Image (cartoon, rainbow, N blue to C red; front, side, top):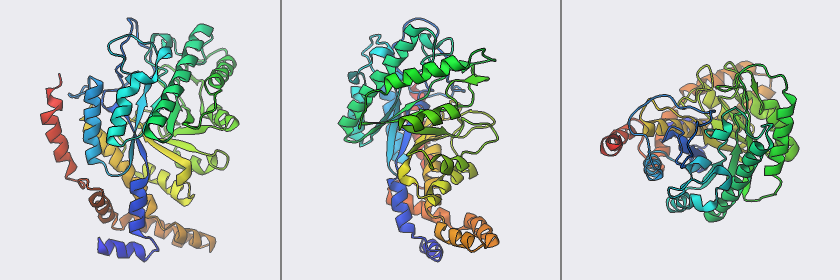
Length: 411
């Protein structure tokens, strides 16, 4: 580590400071990897609405909230740095009773709040606008049926009350993210009405000002069943967020398969006050593969570092792979995200900008490329040591032991 520290210091980079900041940067861990996005609500009979799907049948899926929390605790043991838990409304605990989504209350999440307090993990929240009979035809907040639309509006309002209760319990704001699956598989005759109705619905949900909720809206290019037309497009939600003074969410998978989102960060933050990043890994489409420490991920955090925008960006993971051990999926993706944060904080941003300002573009490009072979691994190992978490090549043994002891007993 001393050699690595010296090499980075020669470029004006303080590795100790970078480690401290990387450990203190919050990542909101998504709840839905543990149980394949099923949730734990008691449902009425009827076909569940579409909008989201996990693929694979690897053994050990969490079947109850207690099993999910047990899995999250195992993940917390293996991932360094500050973590939050990003919870969906369909993870409500209603004591075996049917409580529809428009009637959810903070008490249905009391166990989650108590768990967060015990684990010192703050909670974030998401309304669940999918997997429900009233979402079967592909529309929720933009539905032309007023009664269905009002049901989902009330669900959104209820979720903000729940998020406020979470914020009071944990002593800090709760991020609330709105994603809806609304759209058409093929060409609609009327694109205008649904977007006008979505605006009306969101305004109704967000009418009450709240210092406890930090609200974001999440766009999408397409989804299963909405390949041609998505009501909540990037243009729509960016404009809505900007006009209403709320945050805009960028999901790494919600763009054209050939698009990278790192270039969008500096563009949006010229005008938006804050962004929420959903860290994912698309493979040709929004397939939500487990996040890896790849160029796409590194470039996102390099943009944040070079724009000094850490205080304007919230981070959350968003993927669900049911084809591999789910604990391993969590740990791989969360550690990769933390690595990318550290990698960006070790960037010689000041030196690169000086080279660029002097017109030395060859020197700038050379230094950017040479940074890839710096002794980053040694600094990462030191971060894990300071956080008292296992280094690379050691944590997988603990996952295998957990699988033998816990996951293999779930049928």
